[in-house]
Image (cartoon, rainbow, N blue to C red):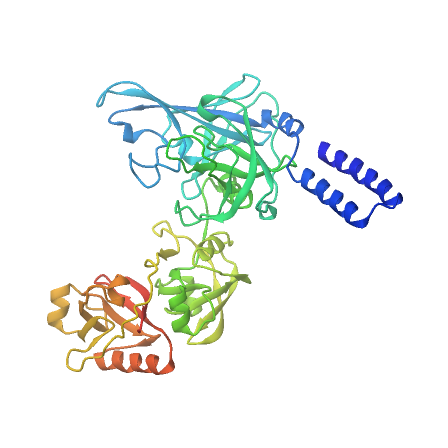
Length: 502
């Protein structure tokens, strides 16, 4: 590279200065100046881009629709939906509502295999009647078959029949990308083919709430409408990401773009190639994050792991002895830092593999093994229970009022048949029912509601208000600042809530 050559020349000159007995401070300052100059990034990426542009293609689709604009292919949701600001398509619609019309969509893709395998985004080709792949030399090939597509990672694999082998990309290791590394995007922004933009990796492991397997690379390389499905290259010309989404109030690039890491993409694409579908691993647990307050209630030094709120019947987790209120610390030797690490790790595990789990159970480390099954068609994923919003602890002390069983801002009662009927509580649910929640109390701020049933307090089952009182008094005496409640709603859905004790 050019900047490497200039750096070598500069260092050679500095060595001559040292021979002339320049002061050490002056030599050091000169060395720092060279470092600063060479840290500005590459002088040019022309050589890298020139060899890659023919591996990148434009994807054009058409579909005949009846109805409104909201049904256009590739649109992740109606106008104003949470995903509207993320996904980048370019539409050309004609006709009035209720009249059949042709809808066009433009996106990007790249050649994965010389035989004619093309990678793009699922939302680029979703619902299309016809898909055309346009190459830089002017060749146009109709897609013969969609080999497979995966909405959860927004990837699709297409097959065309070229007359001669195509030039394909090579993949790099996305796990080696660091914040600040230079990257290059090539794609089809706004229908302008073969556009090259350069930037850096702004962040890794980014979660944008697009799905359970979010693990995006974030980049400030300009990504606009029509770049969807195009490659993100490192400076060695290897694909380390598939450009998928942007955040933008205007529809244009503001320097916040997201790419599916190549390591994640390859796992999905290999399955689509072999099976025409994804075959993800399944553990069978509902999990939530270990917040700071939950960590305190469990005696942990810091938040860590994925807390099990529910174990699905007849699941690998149930067979392996995983229990509600367990905290999964490690999965197959991989540390689970937060709840979203678990679904990604499980999904990437081969079906049938025997996997060790390290659990935290009642303050002790427990090791179990599970045999990973295939994610059933009727299961969405390892269910993720979103945390309640963080709140500041209430300085006011919670009072225990005899007669009302009032604590933490809650009024509680035995779960009688009358209360079951009043709140619609299922017959299989056992515990102590919450009949009232004081406004602005710690429990109210944690979204605890009347009709919730307290199943456990600090990982011990409760059946009477006295059990709850006893556990709370023990927590207060121990000096812990929060109490961990396992709550069930009327349908039996479980969640953990850590409520400040005052």
